[in-house]
Image (cartoon, rainbow, N blue to C red; front, side):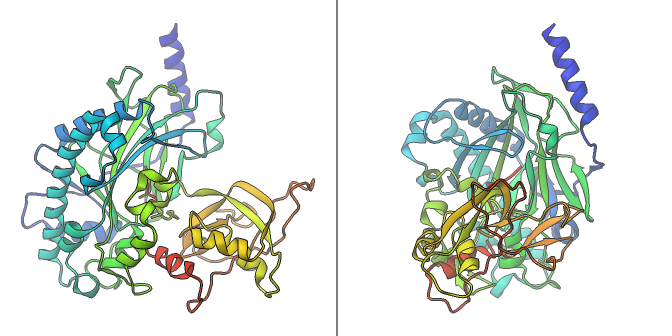
Amino acid sequence: MKSIVAIIALLSAAVCAENYAQYSIPAVDLTDSSASLSIVQALKQTGIVAFKNVPDFENTRLAYVEAAEKCVATPHSAVMRKLMVDGTTRRTLSTNVDLSTVPENLKTACPDYVTALEKFNALLNKATLQFAQLLDGGAVEKGSNGVLIQEVVEQGKHLEHFHAYTNPESDVNQDDYEHSLEPHTDLGAGLWTSAPVFFNAEHEIISNPDPSTGLYIKVDDAWVQPVLKSDELVFMAGEGWSQWIGTDSQSDLHFPAVVHAMKMPRGASSDIVRAFHGRMLLLSEDMVMQNNNLRFKDFNNRNTRFLKEPLADSSFPSIACASRPRALVSLAASDSSCTVGIYEPGNSSSSNATALCNYHCNAINMPEDTQKCKDLGCKLVSSIPNGGTECWMICIQTYTDAQCPSKNQKCVDQTLTCDGKVLTPAPTTAGTNSSATSTSSPSITTIAPKANSSSASTSIICAMLVFVVGVLSM
């Protein structure tokens, strides 16, 4: 009887699911020394490419994913949890590529995971180095300031993350939401990943309960479902690539960031796990962020708890992902939705105090902005759960369906656009007392501090304009 119910549920989910055309990711032989041109062509066109014939990739990756899935199933402090917009639960393990920074509590709780991570990490180090050498050998010109991709790969402060997604246990109308992980781009330079793996309650590998669901990407402005293979390593460019490395739009190394989203198999039971891994590619310490000439080291020092100690803050996976994909911002472990607050000024007489309040008070995990919010005496008068999207570390209120019928909203720096344009007139502040009976959502305007502001947060927020997360985010 249970089998019949399960079959009916899965068939129902398949009927209700929106089917996208399948997309074959251009696959390149990573061992082919002449493959550089093929890699560049694929990435310039769509921002995504797959690599085949990576030695022992499938077995090593599977051992890592199996160990990680068992690790997150055991309650301990190293596991971070997040509730997605459609009720999906996401459990996360996040570490630096530098395995000497793996916290002791994780080593103690999951020794098998740490061992598998070491082996998988070594394999990825070698594969990503080959990728960099192929690009450096085939590109007509180098990246930003003549920096070689190999230097980024070898010296960058990259981040590893693992996500375990499960459907809600209680009855939730997930069909009210098109995606479990909303459309976004990663703010890192790029994301290395592969096909997801599904597990049942006994930690046994099973097939995807609904193959029409999973990762979706945009190609030529149309949603497609990429075909992910278990023996291929996939690279997706993030916002940081064109901001940090291939900044010249005419350069051979200028790759578009991949807009992507994820949908859980809606008919699957809550004990079925969708397991995902990703490595976020970040800069080396002395490389300069091209949009503001800030060294990554300076940014990194101001955000140590997020970049060097990601396990210290449960919000890190979102920060690490970007554009935060729209949203580290889309380490994409990232879900870009956020609760936007409606603020009014208190003790400030500045003519733009209201906008400044809504800027600083809606900053995501930035201590300096939190203090500035207090200094301005800003008062929270209302809030809109999931009413905003994270645009480079600021929660910006989304447009209504009436304002943006296409629902094609995307962050450009710290501005939210609809169909590529900032709507006119822009949303204006209309703070509403939280006890008001009106059901309409107030809208807000935020003003970022000027570049010459003395606020310590200015340089950090500006830095985020080029930085996913990610947590990475599929």
